[in-house]
Length: 234
Image (cartoon, rainbow, N blue to C red; front, side, top):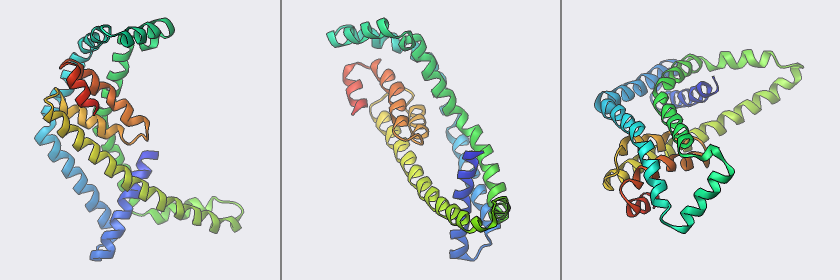
């Protein structure tokens, strides 16, 4: 629901901008925005959906063997031997099997993104068609009445901040997804499209997201050798 509210703010603000520029009623603008987004997503799935599914399937198959190769390669160096010795001595949660399970969970979340997005769009449309009604209803629950004006001001400030936050996050996610996909394709890294989508989706999580996206990319690159790993890290 929280994610749906965020998307609703985005849809409502875009509909308001359309109203200012074209005179289109905000309610109609909300339908137009959701329709355009849905059409773009369906077009993407139609053009590249099969390739995305195939690449995610390839990742599921490659990660266990790649993790083993990565460990074998790292054991050639003293720092690698010390690192794996520390891992084995201090935490079973960092074993290759557990690492694969965690990475697989990340992939599952990335694949499920499209399903969740359909729910978000529906929630966004429902909330953005007439946001003033829901806002007034919420303010009526505020007691005492003298506080309603202050709460209304806070809601306006929150709406502005979330609008700019979403614009920034969308820009970051798009740029990171495109650059990762293109960069990995140029380096001839397998499953470059799936890894790019993972990087873009996880970019929504500040700081931690890009770090999580780095793990599967570097593991897949390890199958191409140390030089590929350095290029991917770069």
